[in-house]
Amino acid sequence: MTHRLIAVITAVLVTISTTALAGWEYTAKTSAQGGEQSQAMNSTIRGWADGPKSKVEFVSAGNPMTPQGSYLVSKDGGKTIYIVNPREKKYSKWDMQAMMDMAGGAMEMMGIKFSTPKVEKLVDEKGPKMLGFKTQHYRFRTTYTMSMNFMGMSQSTETEQIEDVWTVDELDDEGLNVWLNQQNMRTGNKELDKLLEAEMGKISGFPLKRVVITTEKQADGPAEKQTITTEITSLRKASPSDSEFTVPSGYTEQQMFPAGSGMPQGGSSQRGGRQRGGQDDGENPLMKMMQQFQQGQQ
Image 1 (cartoon, rainbow, N blue to C red):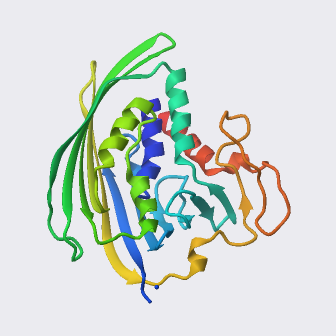
Image 2 (spheres, rainbow, N blue to C red; image 1 turned 90 degrees about the horizontal axis):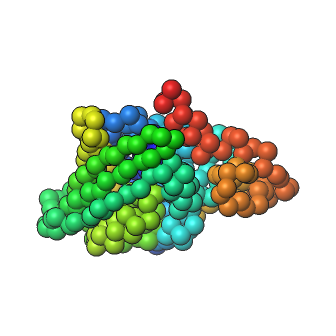
Image 3 (cartoon, one colour; image 1 turned 90 degrees about the vertical axis):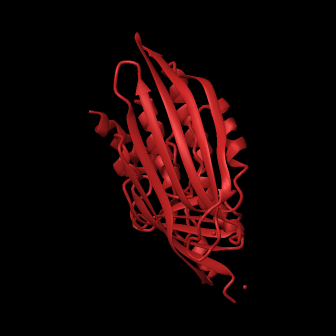
């Protein structure tokens, strides 16, 4: 169950992840086949990048953390990211590291351990032209065994992940890192994530297409396979205004993690308005995602 929760959190990673015409406007689609949480991973986004500034809008998404019309904004190349919900006029700091720390804590509580982790780069070659750009093709293979020992229940799952990435070097706007960083796979296990980070750091350029095939096999069951494809479907030069990359004045900040969750808390306030407490924590996007995940397991 926790493995599926991590997949849903990571799905947010695949729903995201760019003067005269100095910047870029692009659209991208993510589709998933197989697996219990595939629907949460399907999304279409529209993005803008101009130097270190970035905006990623969710045109459609199956994950409650990123409802239709919400968007991510950053002005520092993805070092600081906010998720904005125009319908509710609220925003939160987007902290994927905190989310993965939460997943890691849940795994520790349930006695989940990783063993024999290995990440290999299998291919590094010239790829086909995409959207008029020359590409570089990479292929990685990640394997590990995940065991769980919780309340008298023991389970072991062997995982193999084959990831193909096609990148282009000409797109060097720092703001595109928001897209790239959201695409990088994380598991919540520090040892394995360090291996992944070291290998993925060898990728050069902005990813135009990514295909990840994950195969999981438990000792007492058949193998399960899931394929996730993320692809830039359009890309053009653009000159977005600075207002595209800011949280609108008057929007209320809410915490991604509610009080008492064990996660770090920051002050909640209203931009351009009065101070406000955390009474909206029950409506925060992470809790919505958790509730949907729990309902899917019933």
